[in-house]
Image 1 (cartoon, rainbow, N blue to C red):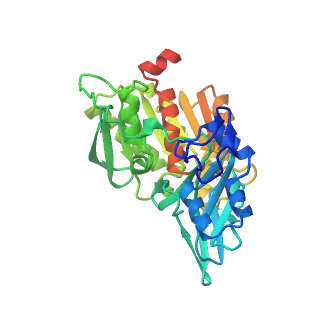
Image 2: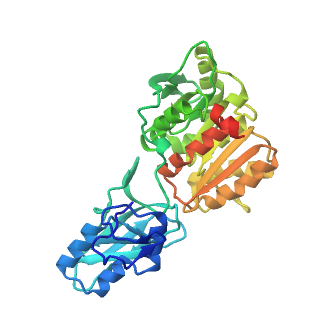
Image 3: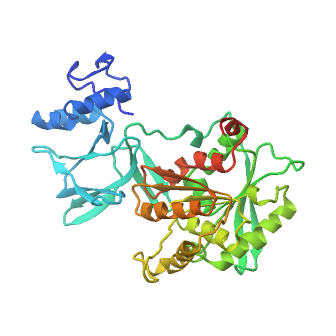
Length: 415
């Protein structure tokens, strides 16, 4: 959250509490909205015909991107031929030009972003006939994924969930690697096993299998999430297996061998070695994007075996006419799966949690899938978020998804 703009005239903008005059206190949400109803800070600066000193004071007085109600001001300072905002909000132009403020080297763009939104972006700098994409040097917030990092802007009211952060008061579960020789996949797979802090062999536990497990751990803080939710009694103690694939687009895209590996090999082996409950209502599959497809595909091939599904931004491509989807040949087998389910929907599981960002192109496919799931009699919960196709979106939905699929003692009080 940004600070009160001490460089601006005291008393010009007022909240319901009165005049804003303290220079270093955080703004409340009502004060943020009140600022928006006044003049945007960047417009006041521009109308003052600023010199270098005024620009310096402006940059020192604010945090960027500058959020004023629903208006967000992106800025960049430097010598360039053009500067563009590059974002991942489906439905908007992916490249939007910043304007250079006359007489300065300050570039700016004001964008309307709904409250509680979270948007990842980069800046594209054109200079000396070339261009490069960079993270915003004025913004300390970063989101990381397997391909690098993006800058992040938080709309009014968004906060990083406290339950996704390390909490020294939460007893930590234990992660240990193990290898598994799969006949179905023709080789060894490396996995990580999560055992809760209170693990005892005299007790029995639900099993959660997570696709793209390393990414959930590295980019969606899933170990922190598990530690915190278990410690706070929001989900029961559970055993979690984090799996990965060296060829995920093939294996996750509706592959019979992958489904066989999980259902006929991995689970029976784990149930022999670990104190698992061993019934459908205590087995869950988790996956995002193509991992969501892999989860649905596995449940489709083994209906009733997996009693819980958590599907996040699943790449559920389908067609109403023909067999080929606009997303290209990589999705042909996905289309086969979803078209088959659309023709003959049946109860694959008991509870299905589906989430998707409204700023991603897959929102249409996910919205279309949910009524089909519901028509089979399965319990289905669908959550939309003002976010895109990224790991922090999926992180932010884990508490709601896991606690709905596996309500702990605390959550069951409210059911």
